[in-house]
Amino acid sequence: MQAGADPEGAEQGRTGREGTGQEGTGQEGTGRTDAAEPTGAEPTAVEDLLYGVIRRLWPLHRTIVRAVERELRGTGMTAGEHALLDALRTQGPRTVPQLARSLDLDRQPVQRWVNHAADLGLVVTAPNPAHRRSSLIRLTAEGSEVMRGIQDSEAAELRRGLADLSPADVSTALHVLDRLGEEFRHLADGSRVPPEESGNPDIRESTDTDATGTAEPSPTTPQQRAATRPSAPLSHTERPGE
Image (cartoon, rainbow, N blue to C red; front, side):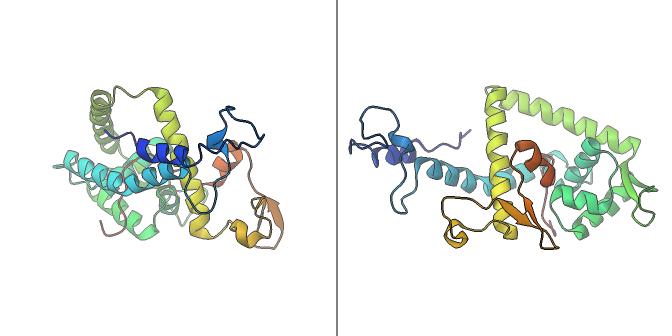
């Protein structure tokens, strides 16, 4: 299993800045060479590693989907429906719009998965006290049992294949993925102004403007940032049409 690091790229990033004898303090040997500001557009060692992570995400996603689909043979379920049922198992009854937000998908494919899962007897609709026109989707007893069996099998495979990873390793990976997701969501919805367009390249955008034109402080703590982004279960989803 590849760790996602690029030792050669990291070494190049280091050597590209060594040998000058210049530090922020004007002294050598402080151990701060790697923290120096990059010159020009040359990527830093961290940027090289981040690109390595990003390049691996799509192939990893496709590989996981294929593995899940193989495991689901004979169940009648797809990888997307597996993600749907996993969301219901971990989050409890949800409406279709809530499930779509949780999975970061359009409502149409999620509704198709719900319909098919209902045909299989894995989910049912229930009245929603908060919204009469938007029913809750919940697992049936059979759906809960099916997901329990799948999860037990997956957990056994993870223990067998990834026993060398420590909790700290996995926590670091989760942190990096969360930060990448946060930054790319800003890029996708245009909510962050690039430094060259902000008029102050040294300060990131510190406020967001709501629909009324009122400036609101951007979330600054991990808890505040987590509250503003949709929770996505670590599961295996497919895009529409898959």
